[in-house]
Image (tube, rainbow, N blue to C red; front, side):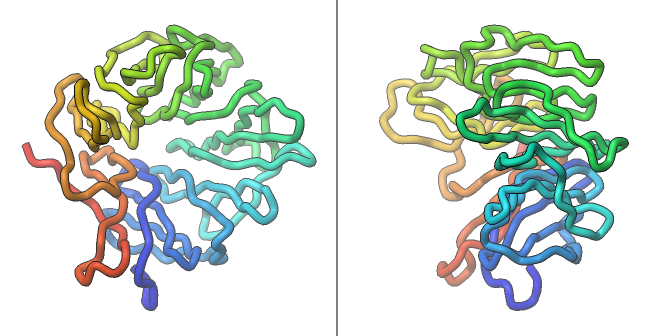
Length: 275
């Protein structure tokens, strides 16, 4: 971590070994294959980093101004958005296209796309909360709508009666209404790929394109929540001692934060799954 920083966390993973997070004093943190990268951005406890891509470009939300931002080309840039709305930038793909969510009372929530090749502009693509964007530019929303860059829209199986929580690595993860004892996985075509059996609202932390998944769940017949790891449809075990895993990388690592050596603070960390 930078000099003088004693605690922080990893919040997002991109391709090519990029990880992004923040220190507890609000400073943005960026690593490339484990090496710290200098970031020229203001430190603010009201700003939040939500995504990073394979070029080290970070996106997020400024809570004071209600504006979305991108950190690219070594500068912190505010993104345009609908007047009077609070807007967040939630994910960015390797082409530099960004997706986020806009909200102004009385609603609705709207999914917003900022195309890298159209600087200074934005596009409303759905009346729903945005969940993520893939490298093909497909956007998935919370209710399971899939918007494509050619302007067409299709749906995940079961939409709109869905609560999609994550769209990463080409997979969408979430629940269908009335089915809160499992975690559903869809691909970008909208097909249901798998249904992970659990109970008590399983919640995904991260997944990569190889199907390495980390999720918080309660085992069937159990009473306590666990943090489990799956490779595709195969359950490999629970993470018993490190519960602050937040993301899964394309290289097969887990990342988040863990207790420092003295046990007094939480520090950014990565883990490698054996086997």
